[in-house]
Image (cartoon, rainbow, N blue to C red; front, top):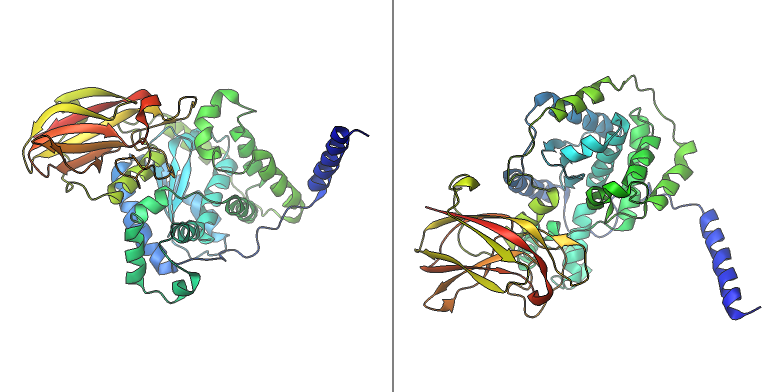
Length: 436
């Protein structure tokens, strides 16, 4: 038999054996592994970080929508490993299909996610998945790995004996907790574990775990190519949909489903009420990803001191377009020391010549440290500013999608893009500038 055919036959046999191999039981060893943070640490950091996120997001104010989503979360939490855990749930007014949990029990559920779900069970599945990330402490475990990989901590032996203030210094060296969380990506094992726990908690709360599988199928771009762009945010960092479905289906016969007594009526009422809610105002349809990146940007570099908002974006005195291949461009604005400035930015650029993956003014997560980047530790593609005084440029500072600051020294404002090779970038950012 020719070698090529032999290799093909071996690969086929290998694939069949892998398909017959039972999946790992991810409900074991929940919360285990390296973690530099206590649960009290998680709560304190989560409270601070959630308050910063809240300031950048637009929320649904209708109390009946908020109450319904909270009731789903409470029902699932009561069936989880930590039924006494306190959860705070907010419904974000953005069309982005996503949900996110901040360590400590702060959950954000997007309007776009609720719109996409066909029944309460699908919504419950995603919420249960996020609660699982919280209870398994996946967030701080991944941040702990980041700190070790960054070389900010020399060895695991020092971790167990560290004091809170020492850890705080390490986090500051790494750019701040916001930077770490914004750049955090759950591992595939974390995602599989969150799926496994979610399916069991759903069943205990009276939701068919098959509804979570139904949601996964809606996320599969091959099944809904017209929605692939909307779903990429939620699906992009997760394991392949087929693997997730297979893992859950394997254990389904072992999961008893409790009696529910719930109907579709409350869910449909929530959907109808949500459809009648106003869309996010101009410039406020902020995705969770953008808000996470913006908080990370603000913590990554001190820059000019923050200031209170000056007014609505519609009052901006200057509006300009910043091409993606810009290094630095003058904003044609002379400023006085201490003068407050508010800047908004929108649009998208493509950081690679052949790439169709855009980034907004917050930049691209986990993008490396190019030698020629103005701020090496900051997201690639992030919008920057600097003040030029007597032809001497001051230190660059992050702006992202929105920033309010006081000018550190008299001079003119320049805007740039945080990249070590801007020349092949496509697209542009539109920038709005308001001063007083």
